[in-house]
Length: 168
Image (cartoon, rainbow, N blue to C red; front, side):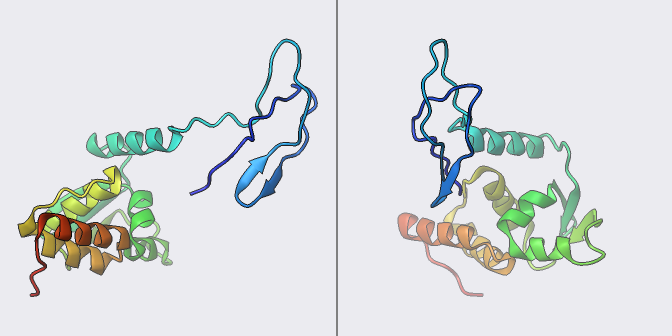
């Protein structure tokens, strides 16, 4: 995640210099404060990523702008390739392969519909809503899809809820 730090400086509106980028922070050289106003060249709203995530989740819930349908045991999940690719190396690899970028349907035989629904909600909301009975299946599915973040969440849920992974 990239964090931008404007260094709390005041700037002249007409004479902004190029920023100095060091250590993943952007700091603008010192400038004089103008009499009438101050201008920050980087006006970063801290909730930008949260709003983007919420907007994307709303698009998914409303089935708007979806560009792929994942088929899991005759269940269809309309979703966005970009979101799947962000959270799963399995999907990232599938969508960038030659000839697969225009794929609009993808069958996923290695997971159950319920586990995929839980993982899909996790991708869009960041919340893993899973019961002890579903935990093993969700963990296995996350492992098959390369979703390390979801796997870590499953381990935390297991320790918090005192659940165990059933080995099948």
